[in-house]
Structure formats: structure tokens, C-alpha cells
Image (cartoon, rainbow, N blue to C red):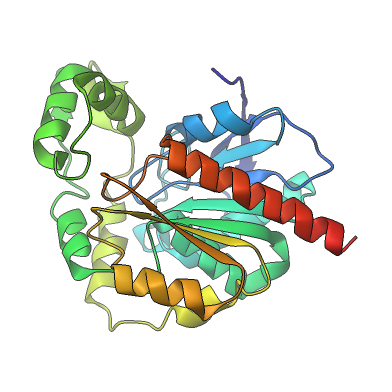
Length: 291
């Protein structure tokens, strides 16, 4: 397993936030990994295992997730605030730009960052997310986010996940479900609980009930950077027609469909890792062109 150092940074409003720092060359942009709504840095262990050492890999816990502090004001659990947090981290580390790898919410944060300061993005991978989100997926997420359920052990959580998400990962083995459980949750006070602040549900519901915003300009801000779009074949969040439009909306986009998985690809699939490898090659080629 790739080794890392646990580090922290302070958000613009003073929260102590956590990231994993996997060492690698500092003369090229690092890979900056951003998890989904209820997820944390453990999600990106397959990416670090594959690329750390050849690349510096930085994996963040967004505020309210994993080892990062919870926000006393749940209204701050929104993409614009997360993007500001990441800008502060890049500034603190003296990083001019990074290859952004964002799963679901992490992809939305990447698009927000592109609109805010695209020069900080050397390339981007958006994992099963786009400027338009399928209402089916939003309804599914809304049915469970913020529900404070706990379990006797990881095996019990794994069985529950398999029951609820079997359509998302139809080929998962019991061992894979238990590994999945250990990425989502941690032991707390003798019980196994999901590793995020339940208050993030408020921000999610507020965004669902608000009038739809036009996010396409945020996506189009990535023009000029190498972009990879991953889409799970069975996803209920990123419709194929939206993904196809994304692939044609700006230049230098590769669309990759990951077979037999839903939302979101776990980034341990051979197709996902190969797509990241190609993206990194495109990033290096672009840097050589602009050197």
C-alpha cells in the first residue's frame, strides 16, 4: 500500500482541514483528489497506489468529512466554499496548478474552481458528474444522506450496502463490499458510523430545492485543459446525452464509460486507471508544448 503523511491546513474561516500527502516529484503538477458528497480521502487509495511516487498525490477531506473539522455553520457546506478551501491549500503549499480528480461533488468543485481560477488546473478528471444531474440520482442520494445510522461492525454495514446498492455494483464480491464499507465509515464509540457530518444534508437539500442553475459555463471554463470524463455504465446521475454533449462542448475531452458500475466508478477499475494514465500523459504533453 502506498504510504502517505497526514497533514492539515486552515480554511479561510479557520477550520482545520485534513489531507493525505503521498510523496512524488515536485517539478510537475500534483494530482489533487476531491471526494464526493459523503466520502473521504480513503476513496482514492487505488489512485495513490497506482501513481504515487511517479506523481505527488494529494487527497483532501472536505470540511465535515473524514478527519477534517465539522463546520458549525452548515450553510457553508457548498461547492463555492470548498473551492475556496482548496485554493487556500494550494497557496499554502506553493502549488501553481494541479491535476484535479473529482468524484461527483468533487467534480462540481473542480468546475467551480475552473470558473474561479482556471490557471490552477493543469488537467481535470470528472468522475460521473456533469453540469446537468439526473433527478433520479438526486432523489436516491436525498433518501439516505444525513441519516445517522450506525452498525455493530463493518460486516453488518457491508451487508446493508450490498442490499441497497447491488444495482450500482452488480459484480461486487462480499470482500469488495466490506472494503467499500471501510472507505465510507469508521469506528466511533464502539459502533461503525458513516464518516461525515450529518448536517451536510441541509446544504444538499437546499441546492435541490433551489431553481436550477446553469452550470455549463463552469464546465466550459475548462476549455484549453486536458479533460477526462468518466461515466458509469449503470449511473443514475450522469445521463449519456449529457456526457456526449460534454464531450463535444469543449476541445481535448476524452469520454470513458466504465462497464458494469453505477454512480460512481471506484477508480480501481482497469478502465478508470488507464484513463487517468492517459490524462496525465496529455497534461505532460501540454506542459511541454507551453514550456
